[in-house]
Amino acid sequence: MWRMGGQWACIMPDMPDTESQATPVSVDPNRLKITNDAATEGTLIGFRCNECETTVFGPAVFCQQCTSTDLEAVELGVKGTLFSYTIVRIPPAGWPGDVPYVLGQVELPQGPQVLAEIIGCEHDDLRIGMTVEMTLQAVPAENGGPDKAVYKWRPA
Ligand SMILES: [Zn+2]
Image 1 (cartoon, rainbow, N blue to C red):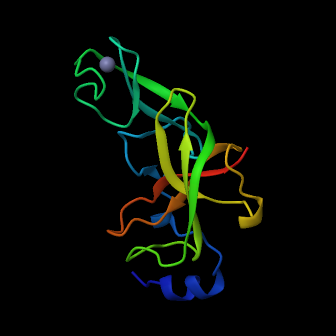
Image 2: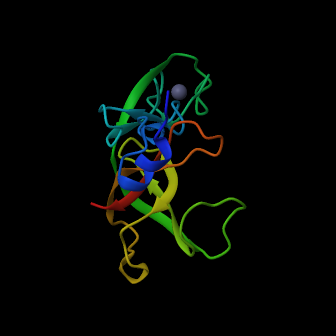
């Protein structure tokens, strides 16, 4: 059969590349649960201790406060307050984003803190105690698999 693939590629340069249409997957299923089909929304997740009510972000086998193993998986939501931040001018190797960037330490209402990039905020507008909300960004996977949905913070 006579193939015209090359010509079609020239005629229709805006054809979507179906290979890259796969839905992004959570960058870390132990910390981020995707909650919609397009992977644009999600919630942070962790564990709460049923003995002392200490809550942690991410996976846990036992409570760091009281060593109880009576832990319950909980959704931690998408909002928090800025506890501390730093402006990173020398990124780690392979950093895919802009430089400099803001790395924020955000305290969730349940107590645990979450470290992630803060986007959509001028450096001069950063304030300790400001309310921020989680937002997801699709980042290409290094191994060529589906994009990773990465959690970041932005002013709420
Ligand atoms: Zn505990």
